[in-house]
Image (cartoon, rainbow over all chains, first blue to last red; front, side, top):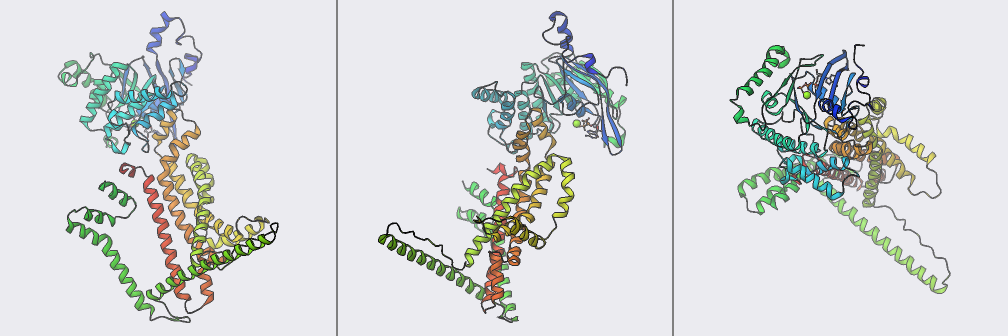
Length: 297
Length: 339
Ligand SMILES: Nc1ncnc2c1ncn2[C@@H]1O[C@H](COP(=O)(O)OP(=O)(O)OP(=O)(O)O)[C@@H](O)[C@H]1O
Ligand SMILES: [Mg+2]
């Protein structure tokens, strides 16, 4: 047992430190900074070759309304971190605290946008969002309110024209938009995105990034996004968490991106500050965390 | 409109009808003619060749019941069987009419008289046997599906359950229907004892044998289908906190429907084959019994009538398979784009 593994010791479940109804003046800055707190998260997977320690003491504190990217080489454990936040995987040590409550199970307050959209292929665009809305706002919204809310969220991602199409009838980019709409429609505290644009071509990806920035400007969600794309990370994020190579991966460095918003990709392309951030990330990935050649293949 | 029709034909596996539609709407006649020849002409030629070969070879084979019947004799027997069926039906109608008249007279004399309505007990015709067989196979198949689909879903969702029952499935799956039959017959006679049976014992025996043999493909395919559902789809359900039954009915079941239907299709095919064997061996009513009776009967027409039955069995098997295939295509997600 190492020093601080017990999260509940740090943040008791009925804690008085960062719950909303405590002393506002002193609590708010801390609560805001520690809105989502990932502390000392380690995970071991049982494999046929014995336990495989994928993550080792991952620490990350995320503020409310912050957009944070996780970047790292393939297989380092980014999805694992995200799944632990989502509650889909259980950390072996350490834990995740959201708004003062420890995360143990999946829930709609941490909506996930999956890499390959994961829309149910037998449901239409509208029905896919409806499934989530009906479940999350059961007894909270009336039928017409739900309908309005579903349409509103699909409008946000510019998908109103295809409400009654099935996933197989729309393009990859559109599917991803619907996936985002479904997640947004849950009104989550944290939006978790696992390489949301990874499977798309460069042009579509740029469109979706712009859409996402637009939405983010209006809604100011707390977002954790995994990406492989350095430009995407710099363009979208407030901070970039760079992960070391696995096994026993952890957050190596965190880079604060202080570019003004709104950001425009064309204007930024010859912005020296932007390029400086890019270089920083590239240096981390390809100099300090170079992957052995045979693994990157 | 035209594309919709073409789409429906293709989903139904009637691709040869497509060039016809295209021809009718005046698309490039030469191209469509070629397509029609490929899709419809070639199989027809093959059938013609087969009939010719059959006709020539059959004449060479002398059995104790005369020469093996060729296509024309078999056709004659088909007509014959149909005529017998008509005759039997006419007799039945006549019987009921006579009975009604008799009862009416009785009531006229004495309004309190108890009248008897007897069912007609004629010999089942070839077409009656077909209906019996179809009814039996669907009963057995339905029973198998009702057991196999829920069990398969449970196995697919729980690795432990699957590991537990997997050896049993592996052992029971390859058992021949003929091996089950004596056991099923004995068990049915021992257990199914009522004074007023809703179904005949023979029917229950045949249906249960079909169930036992057609259970496995559906079970295995359902389990595989559920187990291979994209993890992310199930995770979607977990994130929005679907309860257990919603997770099954809203995600697991629809996601594995195509695989389930593949299993059902194989099951129905096996069930049909098993049924004929069971009917022959156990003398249970149906097409199998018809074949067996004709074989025992040994008249000069018997071989021809057996061949009619054999071809009918094949044809029905083909139609059942085609039905399931069409259903399967309608539930598969890829094809749903066409709707
Ligand atoms: N259920 C599991 N059992 C065993 N090992 C696992 C399991 N899930 C993940 N791993 C291992 O943990 C490591 C991290 O996996 P993870 O999927 O989080 O990587 P990633 O950074 O998301 O990769 P990519 O960028 O390719 O998506 C990998 O080495 C992987 O093999
Ligand atoms: Mg990943």
